[in-house]
Length: 450
Image (cartoon, rainbow, N blue to C red):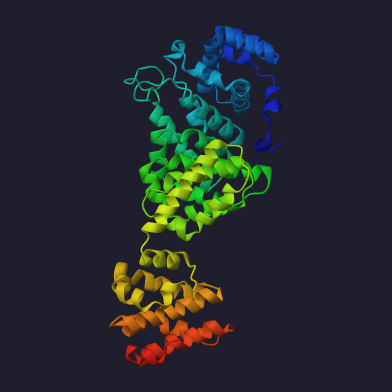
C-alpha cells in the first residue's frame, strides 16, 4: 500500500516490538511499562491514563521519536499522538508540562517534516501546529520549552520559522496531490495569529501562493479550503507589511468575486471582515468603489444573515465606501477604471474640461495610464472598452501639446489601425477618429469631434 494512503486507524493496528527496543537500550524499562500499559487500549482507558499521568506518556512518545528511526514505529507513535490530540486538543498543553522542561519537545516533529513520507509529514505538521499554539505565554507572548533559553533547545521562533518554510513549500510543490495544499492552509489558518509567522510568511512571498486559491467554490471540500484561505488573508489584514503586499496582487477583485457568489455564511463573514480591515488602507477604498463593491454590499444587506457581526461589518463597509466615493477626484475615478480595464462612456470621457484640467496627470509614472490604455487595445475583447480606449487616446492627442508624438512613440498607431476593421461599428468609428487625430494633429480636432 502507498504510504500516502495510510490511515491513522490502519497504523494503530500495528504491533510494535517494544521489548526489542528495550534490549537495545533505545527505550528504558519505565518507558516499556508505560507503552505496554497504553498500547491497544480502548479510548476510555487511554483517556484515563492520560488524565492520571499525561506528561509521562507524552515524554515517552517524544523520546521514541527522538531516538528511534524505523518508519513503522515513527508512524505508529505519531498516530498515537494524533489520536490523543484529536480526542481532546487541550492535551497539547501536556507537551509544555514543567516535568518535561529538560525535553526538546519540538525538535523531533520539526525534523520529521523533512521525511519523504506523507503520513509522517502530515502528522508532524498537525501536531507541531497544535503544540506550538498551546504553549504558555509570558507578557511578550513568547516562551518555549521552559525558560532555558541558553540551552541548545529548539526555540519557538525556530519551530515557527521552520514550519512556515515547510508550509510554503507545500503550497508551491505539494508532497501529496490532494492533501498537501489543504493541510498547509489549515495549519496556516491556525498559526498566522503569531507575529513571527506573519513576518516570515510575507518574507517568503507566501501571499502570492494564497491568491490563486481565492476563487468561488462549490464542493464541500473546496468551500472549506476557500474559507481557510480567506481566514489566512483576514489574519494578514492586521499586519501592515502584508497589507502593502496585498495591494500589489489581485487579492481584492478575487475577494469581491467570492463574496458576490458565495452562499456560505462563514465565507461571506470572513471576506467582509477582511474588506472592512482593508477599506481605510492606501488605495483599497478607491479600488473597492471601482470594483462596484457598493452595489455588492447593497445586495448582501438584502439577504437574511443570522450573524449580527456580519450585518454590522456590512453597515461599516457601506458608510466607508460612501465616504470614498465623495473623496475620489474625477481623475482618480478615471485612473481606477483604466487600471481595472473596465471602460464605459461615463461623462468624463467626453468632457473637454476634464481633459484640459488633468492632461498633465497622464505624465505620471512615465505615462503609465497611457501605456495601460494601449495595452487594453491588445488584450480586451469587450467592444465598449475598445471603443472608449480609442476615444481616450484621441482625446490625449488633442489636449496634450506633444500628444501625437508620445502616442506614436508608444507604438499605439499600429494597434489602433487594426481596430479600424473591427466588426463592431462603435469600435471602428473611434479607431478612425484616433487615427485622424494622429495623422492630422490637434489643430483639426474641432472638425473631427465624434
